[in-house]
Image 1: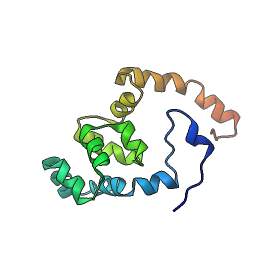
Image 2: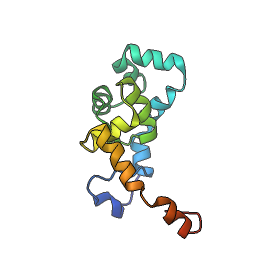
Image 3: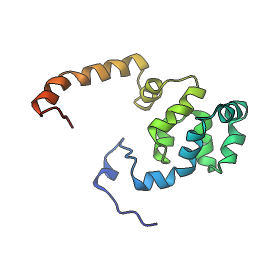
Image 4: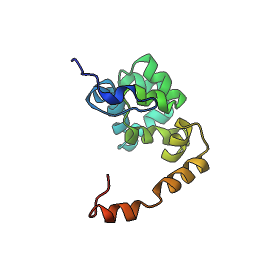
Length: 132
């Protein structure tokens, strides 16, 4: 399939989960969704590499899964919400993974979220209940 270039393709540090990324990361995201079932979580925990092979992940994707390389997994088409399921196996929360992606501590990331949330309620009310 041919994908058109998008304006956001050239924004540094931006990994938009669009149709192209969805297609790239299909197997990875399918594997992540398999963790909804306990037996699959147990299999993955027992042998992560073998479980990645079961889903026919590329060597590059498998290496990123095993290393917990969240930025690389985003680049390879991972959906951030699904990748949270993998972060748990690395002993990390979503906030931990996001902090790592931004090269900061989890506490710094949490503070950044709080700082960026200042005034959201007022902006939402001004916009008639929606903010975006």
